[in-house]
Length: 532
Image (tube, rainbow, N blue to C red; front, side):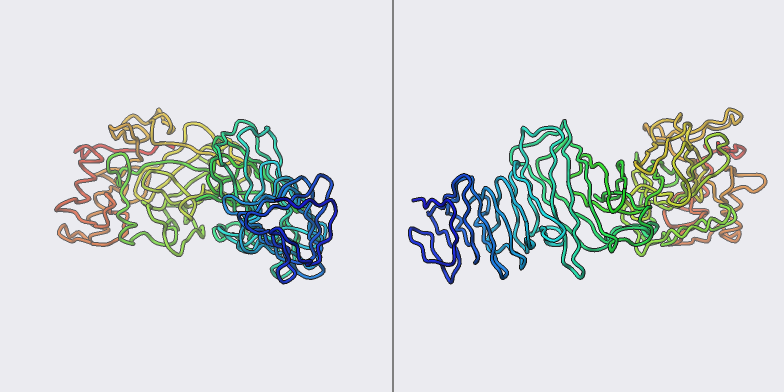
Protein backbone atom coordinates (compact mmCIF):
# COMPACT_ATOMS: atom_id res chain seq x y z
CA UNK A 1 0.00 0.00 0.00
CA UNK A 2 1.39 3.44 -0.92
CA UNK A 3 1.40 6.67 1.01
CA UNK A 4 1.46 9.67 -1.37
CA UNK A 5 3.20 12.91 -0.50
CA UNK A 6 3.33 16.24 -2.32
CA UNK A 7 5.36 18.22 0.21
CA UNK A 8 5.53 16.68 3.66
CA UNK A 9 7.73 17.63 6.62
CA UNK A 10 8.45 14.58 8.78
CA UNK A 11 9.17 15.43 12.38
CA UNK A 12 9.17 11.93 13.84
CA UNK A 13 5.35 11.65 13.72
CA UNK A 14 4.02 8.15 14.05
CA UNK A 15 2.65 6.90 10.75
CA UNK A 16 0.82 3.67 9.98
CA UNK A 17 0.77 1.29 7.06
CA UNK A 18 4.39 0.25 7.54
CA UNK A 19 5.78 3.77 7.42
CA UNK A 20 6.44 4.84 10.99
CA UNK A 21 8.60 6.79 13.37
CA UNK A 22 10.88 4.64 15.52
CA UNK A 23 12.65 6.79 18.13
CA UNK A 24 11.81 9.75 15.85
CA UNK A 25 13.32 8.03 12.78
CA UNK A 26 11.58 7.73 9.43
CA UNK A 27 11.11 4.01 8.90
CA UNK A 28 9.74 2.30 5.79
CA UNK A 29 9.23 -1.31 6.76
CA UNK A 30 9.25 -4.60 4.90
CA UNK A 31 6.58 -4.69 2.23
CA UNK A 32 5.69 -1.03 2.70
CA UNK A 33 5.89 1.63 -0.01
CA UNK A 34 6.65 5.33 0.08
CA UNK A 35 5.72 7.25 -3.05
CA UNK A 36 7.00 10.78 -3.71
CA UNK A 37 5.23 12.31 -6.68
CA UNK A 38 6.78 14.43 -9.40
CA UNK A 39 7.74 17.82 -7.98
CA UNK A 40 7.08 16.64 -4.46
CA UNK A 41 9.44 16.55 -1.48
CA UNK A 42 9.58 14.43 1.66
CA UNK A 43 11.72 16.26 4.20
CA UNK A 44 13.26 14.28 7.06
CA UNK A 45 15.00 15.93 9.98
CA UNK A 46 15.74 12.67 11.77
CA UNK A 47 17.33 9.40 10.63
CA UNK A 48 15.96 7.41 7.69
CA UNK A 49 15.69 3.62 7.62
CA UNK A 50 14.55 1.79 4.49
CA UNK A 51 13.98 -1.92 4.80
CA UNK A 52 15.48 -4.08 2.08
CA UNK A 53 11.96 -5.26 1.18
CA UNK A 54 10.52 -1.74 1.14
CA UNK A 55 9.73 0.26 -1.98
CA UNK A 56 10.40 3.93 -2.65
CA UNK A 57 8.62 5.14 -5.77
CA UNK A 58 8.00 8.31 -7.70
CA UNK A 59 10.28 10.95 -9.19
CA UNK A 60 10.13 13.36 -6.29
CA UNK A 61 12.83 14.28 -3.77
CA UNK A 62 13.85 12.91 -0.40
CA UNK A 63 15.37 15.82 1.54
CA UNK A 64 17.54 15.32 4.63
CA UNK A 65 17.59 18.67 6.38
CA UNK A 66 18.13 18.01 10.05
CA UNK A 67 20.07 20.29 12.36
CA UNK A 68 22.18 17.53 13.92
CA UNK A 69 24.03 14.66 12.27
CA UNK A 70 21.73 12.21 10.49
CA UNK A 71 22.07 8.66 9.21
CA UNK A 72 20.38 6.86 6.36
CA UNK A 73 20.06 3.12 5.89
CA UNK A 74 19.29 2.83 2.19
CA UNK A 75 18.20 -0.81 2.52
CA UNK A 76 19.97 -1.75 -0.70
CA UNK A 77 22.07 -4.87 -1.14
CA UNK A 78 21.99 -6.29 -4.66
CA UNK A 79 18.30 -5.47 -4.62
CA UNK A 80 16.16 -3.17 -2.58
CA UNK A 81 14.72 0.34 -2.55
CA UNK A 82 15.94 2.97 -5.00
CA UNK A 83 15.68 6.68 -4.28
CA UNK A 84 15.11 8.83 -7.34
CA UNK A 85 16.45 12.13 -6.01
CA UNK A 86 18.25 12.76 -2.73
CA UNK A 87 19.14 16.21 -1.42
CA UNK A 88 21.32 16.72 1.65
CA UNK A 89 20.98 20.09 3.33
CA UNK A 90 22.38 19.45 6.78
CA UNK A 91 25.56 21.23 7.81
CA UNK A 92 26.17 18.54 10.45
CA UNK A 93 26.36 15.88 7.72
CA UNK A 94 24.75 12.55 6.90
CA UNK A 95 26.32 9.07 7.25
CA UNK A 96 25.37 5.83 5.57
CA UNK A 97 24.52 3.02 7.95
CA UNK A 98 22.97 -0.44 7.73
CA UNK A 99 22.74 -1.35 4.06
CA UNK A 100 23.91 0.53 0.97
CA UNK A 101 22.14 3.47 -0.63
CA UNK A 102 21.11 3.49 -4.30
CA UNK A 103 20.28 6.66 -6.23
CA UNK A 104 18.46 6.55 -9.55
CA UNK A 105 18.61 10.13 -10.82
CA UNK A 106 20.33 12.76 -8.70
CA UNK A 107 22.29 13.27 -5.51
CA UNK A 108 22.76 16.91 -4.52
CA UNK A 109 24.66 18.15 -1.50
CA UNK A 110 23.77 21.75 -0.68
CA UNK A 111 25.10 21.77 2.90
CA UNK A 112 27.05 19.17 4.84
CA UNK A 113 28.89 16.04 3.75
CA UNK A 114 27.73 12.53 2.96
CA UNK A 115 29.96 9.97 4.71
CA UNK A 116 29.88 6.49 3.16
CA UNK A 117 31.61 4.93 6.18
CA UNK A 118 31.77 1.21 5.34
CA UNK A 119 28.68 1.27 3.13
CA UNK A 120 28.42 1.67 -0.63
CA UNK A 121 26.81 4.58 -2.41
CA UNK A 122 25.35 3.08 -5.59
CA UNK A 123 24.62 5.35 -8.56
CA UNK A 124 22.68 4.01 -11.53
CA UNK A 125 24.01 4.73 -15.01
CA UNK A 126 21.72 7.78 -15.27
CA UNK A 127 22.40 9.13 -11.77
CA UNK A 128 24.61 12.18 -11.30
CA UNK A 129 26.02 13.70 -8.13
CA UNK A 130 26.57 17.39 -7.29
CA UNK A 131 28.38 19.10 -4.47
CA UNK A 132 30.75 21.89 -3.52
CA UNK A 133 33.82 22.69 -1.46
CA UNK A 134 31.64 22.78 1.66
CA UNK A 135 29.31 19.88 0.85
CA UNK A 136 30.74 16.71 -0.65
CA UNK A 137 30.93 12.91 -0.55
CA UNK A 138 33.50 11.44 1.84
CA UNK A 139 34.20 7.88 0.67
CA UNK A 140 36.12 5.53 2.90
CA UNK A 141 39.88 5.25 2.43
CA UNK A 142 41.46 2.25 0.75
CA UNK A 143 39.75 -0.47 -1.20
CA UNK A 144 36.63 -2.45 -0.39
CA UNK A 145 33.67 -1.09 1.53
CA UNK A 146 32.81 2.58 1.48
CA UNK A 147 33.11 3.02 -2.26
CA UNK A 148 31.03 5.03 -4.68
CA UNK A 149 29.73 2.38 -7.08
CA UNK A 150 28.86 3.61 -10.56
CA UNK A 151 26.65 1.27 -12.57
CA UNK A 152 27.21 1.35 -16.35
CA UNK A 153 24.81 0.97 -19.24
CA UNK A 154 25.49 -1.36 -22.15
CA UNK A 155 24.09 1.35 -24.42
CA UNK A 156 26.12 4.24 -23.03
CA UNK A 157 26.89 7.26 -25.22
CA UNK A 158 30.51 7.93 -26.18
CA UNK A 159 31.90 10.76 -24.12
CA UNK A 160 29.60 10.15 -21.17
CA UNK A 161 30.83 12.24 -18.21
CA UNK A 162 30.60 11.03 -14.62
CA UNK A 163 31.52 13.56 -11.94
CA UNK A 164 31.96 12.94 -8.22
CA UNK A 165 32.19 15.70 -5.58
CA UNK A 166 34.59 13.81 -3.32
CA UNK A 167 36.75 15.01 -0.45
CA UNK A 168 38.08 14.02 2.94
CA UNK A 169 37.95 15.30 6.50
CA UNK A 170 41.17 13.69 7.73
CA UNK A 171 43.06 16.48 9.46
CA UNK A 172 42.24 19.51 7.33
CA UNK A 173 39.05 19.07 5.32
CA UNK A 174 39.91 19.04 1.61
CA UNK A 175 37.61 19.02 -1.39
CA UNK A 176 39.03 16.91 -4.24
CA UNK A 177 36.39 16.09 -6.86
CA UNK A 178 37.17 13.77 -9.73
CA UNK A 179 35.48 13.05 -13.04
CA UNK A 180 35.68 10.29 -15.62
CA UNK A 181 34.75 10.39 -19.29
CA UNK A 182 33.99 7.01 -20.86
CA UNK A 183 35.11 7.27 -24.45
CA UNK A 184 33.63 5.42 -27.43
CA UNK A 185 34.31 1.81 -28.39
CA UNK A 186 34.09 0.27 -24.93
CA UNK A 187 32.55 -3.15 -24.39
CA UNK A 188 30.15 -2.95 -21.45
CA UNK A 189 28.84 -6.26 -20.12
CA UNK A 190 25.52 -6.62 -18.36
CA UNK A 191 25.94 -5.57 -14.75
CA UNK A 192 29.18 -3.66 -15.42
CA UNK A 193 30.33 -1.07 -12.90
CA UNK A 194 33.32 0.66 -11.41
CA UNK A 195 33.90 1.65 -7.80
CA UNK A 196 35.70 4.76 -6.60
CA UNK A 197 37.39 5.58 -3.32
CA UNK A 198 39.67 8.31 -1.98
CA UNK A 199 42.84 8.05 0.10
CA UNK A 200 44.34 11.13 1.74
CA UNK A 201 47.96 9.93 1.68
CA UNK A 202 51.03 9.47 -0.49
CA UNK A 203 50.75 6.47 -2.80
CA UNK A 204 52.49 3.50 -1.16
CA UNK A 205 54.10 2.45 -4.47
CA UNK A 206 55.51 5.83 -5.43
CA UNK A 207 59.07 5.42 -6.68
CA UNK A 208 61.46 7.49 -4.55
CA UNK A 209 62.85 9.16 -7.68
CA UNK A 210 59.57 11.07 -7.91
CA UNK A 211 60.01 13.83 -5.34
CA UNK A 212 57.11 16.05 -6.42
CA UNK A 213 53.71 14.47 -5.79
CA UNK A 214 50.36 14.83 -4.10
CA UNK A 215 49.34 13.17 -0.87
CA UNK A 216 46.08 11.94 -2.36
CA UNK A 217 44.93 9.23 -4.75
CA UNK A 218 41.68 7.75 -5.99
CA UNK A 219 41.54 3.90 -6.09
CA UNK A 220 39.23 2.45 -8.76
CA UNK A 221 38.10 -1.13 -9.29
CA UNK A 222 35.92 -2.21 -12.19
CA UNK A 223 34.02 -5.22 -13.46
CA UNK A 224 32.52 -5.96 -16.87
CA UNK A 225 34.30 -3.17 -18.73
CA UNK A 226 36.77 -3.94 -21.55
CA UNK A 227 38.26 -2.39 -24.67
CA UNK A 228 37.83 0.96 -23.00
CA UNK A 229 39.56 4.28 -22.51
CA UNK A 230 38.58 6.50 -19.61
CA UNK A 231 39.83 10.07 -19.36
CA UNK A 232 40.16 11.28 -15.80
CA UNK A 233 40.41 14.72 -14.20
CA UNK A 234 41.23 14.86 -10.52
CA UNK A 235 41.40 17.97 -8.35
CA UNK A 236 43.71 18.50 -5.39
CA UNK A 237 44.55 21.33 -3.02
CA UNK A 238 47.77 23.18 -2.27
CA UNK A 239 47.98 21.30 1.03
CA UNK A 240 48.34 18.05 -0.93
CA UNK A 241 51.50 19.15 -2.75
CA UNK A 242 54.96 17.87 -1.87
CA UNK A 243 57.74 19.36 -3.99
CA UNK A 244 56.98 21.45 -7.07
CA UNK A 245 53.33 21.65 -8.06
CA UNK A 246 54.04 22.57 -11.69
CA UNK A 247 56.00 19.34 -12.14
CA UNK A 248 53.13 17.09 -11.06
CA UNK A 249 51.35 15.11 -13.79
CA UNK A 250 48.60 12.51 -13.80
CA UNK A 251 49.63 8.87 -13.56
CA UNK A 252 47.96 5.60 -12.69
CA UNK A 253 49.11 2.55 -10.78
CA UNK A 254 47.99 -0.95 -11.69
CA UNK A 255 50.66 -3.53 -10.84
CA UNK A 256 53.12 -0.86 -12.00
CA UNK A 257 53.02 2.77 -13.01
CA UNK A 258 51.29 3.76 -16.24
CA UNK A 259 51.79 7.18 -17.82
CA UNK A 260 49.10 7.57 -20.48
CA UNK A 261 48.86 11.17 -21.66
CA UNK A 262 49.31 12.29 -18.07
CA UNK A 263 48.96 16.05 -17.76
CA UNK A 264 48.45 18.75 -15.21
CA UNK A 265 47.18 22.25 -14.68
CA UNK A 266 46.72 24.33 -11.55
CA UNK A 267 45.60 21.83 -8.87
CA UNK A 268 44.49 19.29 -11.52
CA UNK A 269 45.82 15.96 -12.75
CA UNK A 270 44.58 14.49 -16.02
CA UNK A 271 45.23 11.43 -18.13
CA UNK A 272 43.82 8.39 -19.90
CA UNK A 273 43.34 4.87 -18.61
CA UNK A 274 43.06 2.03 -21.11
CA UNK A 275 41.93 -1.52 -20.35
CA UNK A 276 43.07 -1.78 -16.74
CA UNK A 277 41.13 -3.99 -14.36
CA UNK A 278 41.93 -1.90 -11.30
CA UNK A 279 43.90 1.32 -11.01
CA UNK A 280 44.77 4.23 -8.74
CA UNK A 281 44.72 7.80 -10.04
CA UNK A 282 47.66 9.77 -8.65
CA UNK A 283 49.78 12.83 -9.36
CA UNK A 284 53.59 12.98 -9.41
CA UNK A 285 56.50 14.28 -11.44
CA UNK A 286 57.53 11.85 -14.16
CA UNK A 287 60.28 11.71 -16.74
CA UNK A 288 60.86 9.94 -20.01
CA UNK A 289 60.01 6.26 -19.46
CA UNK A 290 61.06 3.24 -21.50
CA UNK A 291 60.26 -0.45 -21.22
CA UNK A 292 62.92 -2.54 -23.01
CA UNK A 293 62.94 -6.30 -23.32
CA UNK A 294 66.23 -8.18 -23.50
CA UNK A 295 67.63 -11.65 -22.79
CA UNK A 296 71.01 -12.64 -21.30
CA UNK A 297 72.70 -15.69 -22.81
CA UNK A 298 74.28 -16.65 -19.50
CA UNK A 299 70.92 -17.08 -17.80
CA UNK A 300 68.95 -18.60 -20.68
CA UNK A 301 66.75 -21.63 -20.06
CA UNK A 302 64.51 -22.32 -23.04
CA UNK A 303 62.87 -19.08 -24.12
CA UNK A 304 63.20 -17.36 -20.73
CA UNK A 305 65.90 -16.84 -18.12
CA UNK A 306 66.63 -18.34 -14.74
CA UNK A 307 66.17 -16.43 -11.49
CA UNK A 308 68.72 -18.49 -9.56
CA UNK A 309 70.64 -15.48 -8.29
CA UNK A 310 67.47 -13.87 -6.96
CA UNK A 311 66.13 -17.12 -5.53
CA UNK A 312 69.35 -17.58 -3.56
CA UNK A 313 69.42 -13.95 -2.40
CA UNK A 314 72.69 -13.26 -4.19
CA UNK A 315 71.72 -10.17 -6.18
CA UNK A 316 72.73 -6.99 -4.30
CA UNK A 317 70.03 -4.61 -3.16
CA UNK A 318 71.89 -1.70 -4.78
CA UNK A 319 72.86 -1.44 -8.45
CA UNK A 320 76.34 -3.00 -9.01
CA UNK A 321 77.70 -0.74 -11.79
CA UNK A 322 79.76 1.77 -9.80
CA UNK A 323 82.95 0.36 -11.33
CA UNK A 324 85.52 1.63 -13.82
CA UNK A 325 84.17 -0.67 -16.53
CA UNK A 326 80.89 1.25 -16.39
CA UNK A 327 82.37 4.73 -15.91
CA UNK A 328 81.69 4.46 -12.19
CA UNK A 329 77.96 4.84 -12.66
CA UNK A 330 76.82 6.20 -9.30
CA UNK A 331 73.04 6.03 -9.59
CA UNK A 332 71.25 5.52 -6.32
CA UNK A 333 68.93 2.73 -7.54
CA UNK A 334 68.38 0.43 -4.58
CA UNK A 335 65.62 -1.62 -3.02
CA UNK A 336 64.88 -2.84 0.47
CA UNK A 337 63.89 -6.23 -0.95
CA UNK A 338 64.35 -7.37 -4.53
CA UNK A 339 61.09 -8.19 -6.28
CA UNK A 340 60.52 -11.82 -7.22
CA UNK A 341 61.10 -13.05 -10.77
CA UNK A 342 64.27 -10.98 -11.24
CA UNK A 343 67.29 -12.28 -13.17
CA UNK A 344 69.73 -9.41 -12.52
CA UNK A 345 70.48 -5.70 -12.69
CA UNK A 346 71.18 -4.09 -16.07
CA UNK A 347 72.03 -0.58 -17.23
CA UNK A 348 69.61 1.13 -19.63
CA UNK A 349 71.04 3.97 -21.74
CA UNK A 350 69.34 6.63 -23.79
CA UNK A 351 71.76 7.39 -26.62
CA UNK A 352 71.94 10.41 -28.89
CA UNK A 353 69.87 10.06 -32.07
CA UNK A 354 72.63 11.62 -34.20
CA UNK A 355 75.72 10.25 -32.46
CA UNK A 356 74.63 7.02 -30.78
CA UNK A 357 78.01 6.49 -29.14
CA UNK A 358 77.04 9.43 -26.94
CA UNK A 359 75.06 8.42 -23.88
CA UNK A 360 72.55 11.07 -22.85
CA UNK A 361 71.22 9.36 -19.74
CA UNK A 362 71.59 6.07 -17.84
CA UNK A 363 69.44 4.28 -15.28
CA UNK A 364 69.92 0.92 -13.61
CA UNK A 365 66.94 -1.38 -13.98
CA UNK A 366 65.90 -4.91 -13.13
CA UNK A 367 65.58 -7.51 -15.87
CA UNK A 368 62.91 -10.13 -15.23
CA UNK A 369 62.98 -13.74 -16.34
CA UNK A 370 60.89 -12.97 -19.44
CA UNK A 371 63.32 -10.21 -20.44
CA UNK A 372 61.24 -7.21 -19.39
CA UNK A 373 63.40 -4.46 -17.91
CA UNK A 374 61.66 -2.51 -15.15
CA UNK A 375 62.34 0.22 -12.67
CA UNK A 376 63.31 -0.78 -9.14
CA UNK A 377 59.76 -1.78 -8.18
CA UNK A 378 59.93 -4.73 -10.59
CA UNK A 379 56.84 -3.69 -12.55
CA UNK A 380 57.03 -0.08 -13.78
CA UNK A 381 58.88 1.17 -16.87
CA UNK A 382 62.37 2.62 -16.37
CA UNK A 383 62.05 6.32 -15.53
CA UNK A 384 64.70 8.85 -16.61
CA UNK A 385 63.26 11.68 -14.53
CA UNK A 386 65.70 14.58 -14.36
CA UNK A 387 68.14 12.90 -16.73
CA UNK A 388 66.51 13.21 -20.16
CA UNK A 389 63.63 15.08 -21.73
CA UNK A 390 61.26 14.16 -24.52
CA UNK A 391 62.99 13.36 -27.81
CA UNK A 392 64.32 10.64 -30.08
CA UNK A 393 66.86 8.24 -28.60
CA UNK A 394 68.54 4.93 -29.28
CA UNK A 395 68.09 2.49 -26.41
CA UNK A 396 71.20 0.75 -25.11
CA UNK A 397 71.51 -2.17 -22.69
CA UNK A 398 74.65 -3.04 -20.75
CA UNK A 399 75.28 -5.93 -18.37
CA UNK A 400 78.22 -6.81 -16.16
CA UNK A 401 79.22 -10.01 -18.03
CA UNK A 402 77.52 -9.69 -21.42
CA UNK A 403 78.31 -7.67 -24.54
CA UNK A 404 76.37 -4.43 -24.76
CA UNK A 405 73.78 -3.76 -27.47
CA UNK A 406 71.74 -0.83 -28.71
CA UNK A 407 68.57 -0.50 -30.71
CA UNK A 408 68.70 -0.38 -34.50
CA UNK A 409 66.08 2.40 -34.52
CA UNK A 410 65.30 5.34 -32.31
CA UNK A 411 62.28 5.62 -30.06
CA UNK A 412 60.23 8.80 -29.62
CA UNK A 413 60.42 9.09 -25.85
CA UNK A 414 57.94 11.32 -24.00
CA UNK A 415 56.84 12.05 -20.46
CA UNK A 416 53.23 11.18 -21.28
CA UNK A 417 53.56 7.56 -22.41
CA UNK A 418 56.11 4.81 -21.91
CA UNK A 419 57.95 3.50 -24.97
CA UNK A 420 58.75 -0.20 -25.33
CA UNK A 421 61.53 -1.82 -27.33
CA UNK A 422 61.89 -5.58 -27.78
CA UNK A 423 65.36 -6.96 -28.57
CA UNK A 424 64.40 -10.59 -28.07
CA UNK A 425 62.57 -11.63 -31.24
CA UNK A 426 64.79 -10.41 -34.08
CA UNK A 427 68.48 -9.96 -34.77
CA UNK A 428 67.61 -6.82 -36.68
CA UNK A 429 66.22 -5.17 -33.56
CA UNK A 430 69.82 -4.59 -32.45
CA UNK A 431 72.24 -2.34 -34.31
CA UNK A 432 74.59 -4.37 -36.52
CA UNK A 433 78.04 -2.89 -37.10
CA UNK A 434 78.97 -3.98 -40.63
CA UNK A 435 82.65 -3.60 -39.78
CA UNK A 436 82.36 -6.50 -37.35
CA UNK A 437 82.17 -9.77 -39.29
CA UNK A 438 83.00 -12.41 -36.69
CA UNK A 439 79.66 -12.17 -34.91
CA UNK A 440 76.24 -10.56 -35.06
CA UNK A 441 75.19 -8.16 -32.31
CA UNK A 442 73.27 -10.87 -30.44
CA UNK A 443 73.37 -14.63 -30.05
CA UNK A 444 70.72 -16.50 -32.04
CA UNK A 445 69.42 -18.98 -29.49
CA UNK A 446 67.87 -21.14 -32.22
CA UNK A 447 64.40 -21.10 -30.70
CA UNK A 448 63.10 -17.82 -32.00
CA UNK A 449 64.88 -15.84 -29.29
CA UNK A 450 67.95 -13.60 -29.45
CA UNK A 451 70.12 -12.80 -26.45
CA UNK A 452 73.03 -10.62 -25.49
CA UNK A 453 76.33 -12.49 -25.87
CA UNK A 454 77.58 -13.93 -22.57
CA UNK A 455 81.11 -14.74 -21.44
CA UNK A 456 82.29 -11.17 -20.88
CA UNK A 457 83.81 -11.82 -17.47
CA UNK A 458 86.00 -8.71 -17.43
CA UNK A 459 83.20 -6.37 -18.57
CA UNK A 460 85.01 -4.98 -21.59
CA UNK A 461 83.87 -4.77 -25.21
CA UNK A 462 84.75 -8.29 -26.35
CA UNK A 463 84.66 -11.96 -25.39
CA UNK A 464 87.79 -14.03 -26.00
CA UNK A 465 89.50 -17.12 -24.63
CA UNK A 466 93.13 -16.22 -25.45
CA UNK A 467 95.13 -13.05 -25.98
CA UNK A 468 95.20 -9.70 -24.19
CA UNK A 469 92.51 -9.11 -21.54
CA UNK A 470 90.89 -12.48 -22.20
CA UNK A 471 87.97 -13.76 -20.17
CA UNK A 472 89.43 -17.19 -19.44
CA UNK A 473 92.34 -15.50 -17.64
CA UNK A 474 89.93 -13.31 -15.66
CA UNK A 475 88.01 -16.40 -14.58
CA UNK A 476 91.01 -18.56 -13.68
CA UNK A 477 93.60 -16.11 -12.38
CA UNK A 478 91.79 -12.93 -11.34
CA UNK A 479 88.81 -14.65 -9.73
CA UNK A 480 90.06 -18.13 -8.75
CA UNK A 481 93.68 -17.17 -8.07
CA UNK A 482 95.00 -19.70 -10.58
CA UNK A 483 93.47 -22.63 -8.69
CA UNK A 484 91.54 -24.76 -11.20
CA UNK A 485 89.99 -26.77 -8.38
CA UNK A 486 88.65 -23.84 -6.41
CA UNK A 487 84.85 -23.49 -6.26
CA UNK A 488 83.23 -20.27 -5.12
CA UNK A 489 79.70 -21.07 -4.06
CA UNK A 490 76.80 -18.67 -3.44
CA UNK A 491 78.58 -15.75 -5.06
CA UNK A 492 77.54 -12.78 -7.17
CA UNK A 493 80.54 -12.65 -9.48
CA UNK A 494 81.20 -11.40 -13.01
CA UNK A 495 83.09 -14.66 -13.54
CA UNK A 496 79.92 -16.64 -12.86
CA UNK A 497 79.25 -16.69 -16.59
CA UNK A 498 76.31 -19.12 -16.52
CA UNK A 499 74.73 -17.13 -13.67
CA UNK A 500 74.05 -20.13 -11.42
CA UNK A 501 75.62 -18.61 -8.30
CA UNK A 502 78.75 -20.79 -8.43
CA UNK A 503 82.07 -19.84 -10.00
CA UNK A 504 84.27 -22.77 -11.02
CA UNK A 505 86.82 -23.71 -13.71
CA UNK A 506 86.31 -27.47 -13.78
CA UNK A 507 83.51 -29.90 -12.98
CA UNK A 508 79.75 -29.83 -13.58
CA UNK A 509 78.30 -26.61 -15.03
CA UNK A 510 81.68 -24.91 -14.94
CA UNK A 511 82.19 -21.41 -16.31
CA UNK A 512 85.26 -22.19 -18.39
CA UNK A 513 83.24 -24.69 -20.42
CA UNK A 514 80.40 -22.19 -20.80
CA UNK A 515 82.85 -19.59 -22.12
CA UNK A 516 84.71 -21.85 -24.53
CA UNK A 517 82.01 -24.17 -25.80
CA UNK A 518 78.64 -22.47 -25.25
CA UNK A 519 79.69 -18.93 -26.14
CA UNK A 520 82.68 -19.41 -28.44
CA UNK A 521 81.61 -22.72 -29.98
CA UNK A 522 84.87 -24.44 -28.98
CA UNK A 523 87.00 -21.98 -31.00
CA UNK A 524 89.80 -20.67 -28.74
CA UNK A 525 90.78 -18.11 -31.36
CA UNK A 526 87.34 -16.56 -31.87
CA UNK A 527 86.83 -13.01 -30.64
CA UNK A 528 83.30 -11.67 -30.22
CA UNK A 529 82.94 -7.89 -30.30
CA UNK A 530 80.02 -5.76 -29.17
CA UNK A 531 78.14 -3.69 -31.75
CA UNK A 532 77.64 -0.11 -30.55
